[in-house]
Image (cartoon, rainbow, N blue to C red):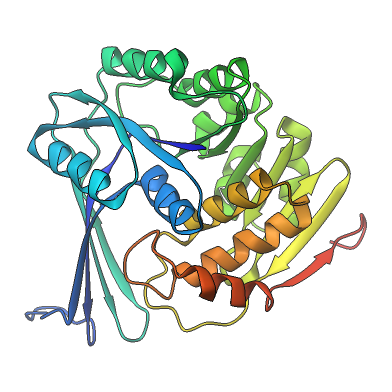
Length: 312
């Protein structure tokens, strides 16, 4: 089972228009309204790929109640802790050329008591041996930098594995717990390591692995993703697709990676599966939505190569 933690969930409103323009009314040809946030999006993709999932985190107010009800309707098994602060809404508008405008309301601060309740929920049986805990997204106000580190330690104590998808101080703290998987973007990896803008994804993945991640994955958009583990480094290059909405591709990547690793696939092949899942997700309007047969088809179009030291 995959347990996805989303500390800053949102109601995601995504609209598709013919062409983005300013100072005029844009009339969408399609609108998707979904419960969102990185952990939610990843669980949606994992559920589409056949995994059993549970979504959890902190929600609040009328928007939070709607979010939990919508997750229930999707079959994403919500187990959210509630607080008074209203869950936020995000707005994405994309056009036929692939351009987008993103407006994200700030996430409400998380009540420390709600976070303590969430830890208790996870440790009291929600998370078990053999499960995967997915910790994804920026930490909202009200939480200390070690929030994901605490969650990773809890996962290991329960006999579960943990993937952390976060940047900044939250990532640095989580690395001290030796998480099973760290997955970040090139920008997040450079910020965390103090590396230059010329540092490549394979180099950054190796450095993150050396800093504490058992498996480190660094994504670089259309250039692909690099994974480093136990002295080996691989790069997966995605196939070319015409994106409808690239938002949430990283979350689908997380889902594809965990589903493949949970199924016992080798790291290199799990990297291919994750890349294919991300590629399939950009063909859909809603974040975390994907067509499993399309993902399987795209998997055969991913280019994989192992990178030897000195060939970065």
